[in-house]
Image 1 (cartoon, one colour):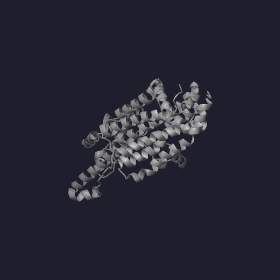
Image 2 (cartoon, one colour; image 1 turned 90 degrees about the vertical axis):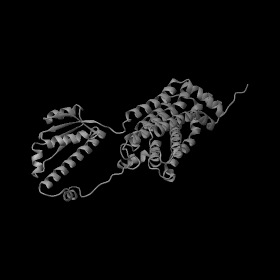
Image 3 (tube, helix red, strand yellow; image 1 turned 135 degrees about the vertical axis):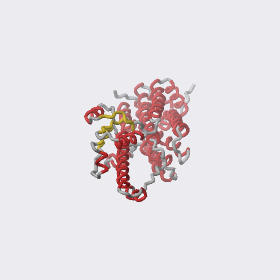
Length: 389
């Protein structure tokens, strides 16, 4: 009986291989699900709170104690230690028991009332960037509040009314309106980008492995024969089961982010659906580009692992791309997840018209077009069936 050939037999064969592969099950399903729930759990608070700090109060007056109580009332700070020795507080910072130190000088209240301009000194541990930045913000706020409070009391002692003093103490009223993420929730910004970075890494590695493992097992010729000796049917039949699996995982991500955690989705479901779909197709195509270009299993997997690992640093989440060198700015454009991130910002957070993101959608599809040019090379790689250890 003549064996059936084409996309469908290759598709069925690959589904069977995935179902019987512990590496695929744990690497694709286990890896993504563990990453999703770990990051969601870690970022559940949205913003760090109760960050421990130390206070060194050399003044120990009602004014300094009031200042300390105000600082402790901030949700981001937790005055863990009160010390009369800066050395002791510094040692606790070196041990990472506290992340900031506020020092109130001796005679602080008396000097403030006599206009001698005492100094509040604070230190933050910016080796931990987020906690250090948040504490710096709080300490700067409390020092400004202390200055305003002293100025108000001093003016009232001289006979001025509060209405006369307020325009001098605070000449400009500031109203802050954070757009698109008014809760200042770090998870809204980080989680929907960090997790797709992990997904891209997995796709790159498993795309290269899907073809390379055939050559390693000596079944490359068998796969090409099953497709009817067609490069198109070989690649499409091979990749389609993975595409469907990755898209199911992406829909799970969207369900958790937008329906369980209620993250903003200002442009609706479809722009983000196609954002995930195009990310998956572009990442698979990039893996095919590695296989077709180098025709070496180990090198293709290594490049996928390397590129996927550095994506989070170059995507522009924690550090602006435009502050990096021109070389890194250009290199970031070669990462599918960078364009995914820009679409996420425009569509999900900012709710801009789809035309603003058309360029990034086109770039993601460009990866697919380039990958298609190398389908023939992938077929040759499988047909030659030469494994280079």
